[in-house]
Length: 89
Figure 1 (cartoon, rainbow, N blue to C red):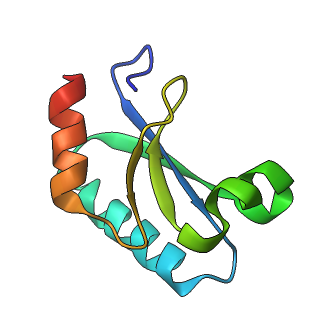
Figure 2: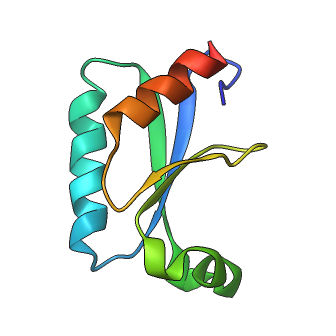
């Protein structure tokens, strides 16, 4: 989703001590040098509903509210992220 400043906003649902989560965050940070977007990491272990939704699939990359469209999980799928950005432009 684009915020009022025209910035694509994403959410990574994950866990503190998750190597796949850290890999996705590192990949997203590297991609930010090429594409303008923001993301935030949300630790699912702080919310039982998020654990129920994402427990076995973290990290999960989703679009920010209101849609919360899942883009990919486990690893950053750059093609899926590109397709998402193309769709919202």
